[in-house]
Amino acid sequence: MTLISRFFIAFALILFVGCSSDDDGTPTGGGGDDDGGVTPTATYELTFTPSFTEESFPTDYPSNATFGPILAIAHPADVSVFRIGQVATEAFKAYAEDGDADTLASALTQGVEGMEVTTMIVTGGSTGPTTTDVTSINVSPSNTRITFLAKLNPSPDWFVGVDAFNVIASDGISLIESDEISLAPLDAGTDAGTTYTSDNEPSNGQTIRVINEAPFGTGGLTPALGVLALRRTN
Image (cartoon, rainbow, N blue to C red; front, side, top):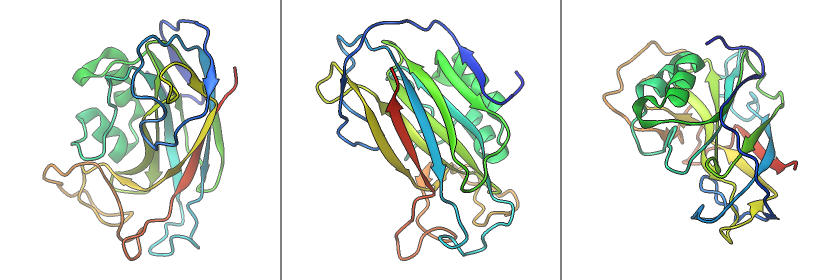
């Protein structure tokens, strides 16, 4: 598989008719807790607006800061691409450390390591630290969760992301119309480096976590590196 800008991998997209509603604002879970009886069809526009500036993050701010590659994934509720508090898979490690979206995409589409999805968009190249990136992705009855990933460069294994956002509203039937999620810096736990350009260091099985210390956090508070806005377009 070769990465190209707006490279689409789509299998078995199923079109149904869905309603709409507002989301409850849960950062990772989205709307409702259950997909039972839902027959959604929708396209969601995903707008990633990074705000990784030297003014907000002055500690060792890298002169060549970028995000990418960017992945948008629609998948079933029982699929977990990443999860805070869990150990990253080998495929996710390849992405977080080296930006290897090919390996992660292959693992997801082929069901490697218990993961299998049917809709994914991979944006090749890189996005500037304040450059907006917009893409769209479809959901279906079997794919009502959206996971978003953008690797931070340079870094040992840092990224921003949204884990399995649920587009089903709190009524368990209709679809959300829109939502906006703040993106904190995340550490994949696969490399123990503590600076943007640290040499590779074994992590001894650390889990995925929010970074709330240098070079991002101050006093236990971590400013967001950006925002992901979801908006239903059909």
